[in-house]
Length: 145
Image 1 (cartoon, rainbow, N blue to C red):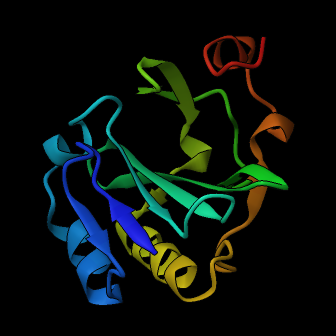
Image 2: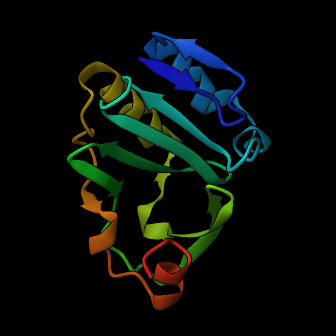
Image 3: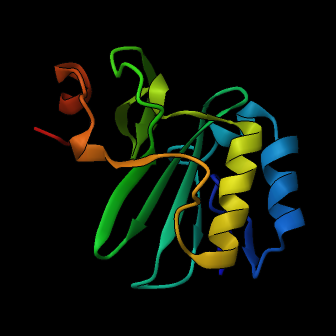
């Protein structure tokens, strides 16, 4: 398992739950905005599951679980997808529903769960990104066109 920081310079091989807890709780918001798109990743290697980690707003995380047969699962509170946060992914504008953000405590729990099981954590409801009731502007800016 490897943790790749948002700036893609720091790589932690076989990170411990304590190291990841520290990364999520103590890094400033600017850390999460560094690099190409401010996205960290936790991955088990080629063809294995990955968890992408973003912090589009201070204290709020957007996680994406992906594996070859299960792409783009995201936390979803069931709320409206109309209230959007502007971020980027792959250098392009990316609009994220606030209903898909989790607080720091939840993000830490989900990251630790992924580290232990390589599966999305069960403490939140996960939905496929393409099944969310996204407004047209979010679909347009998320590669859905």
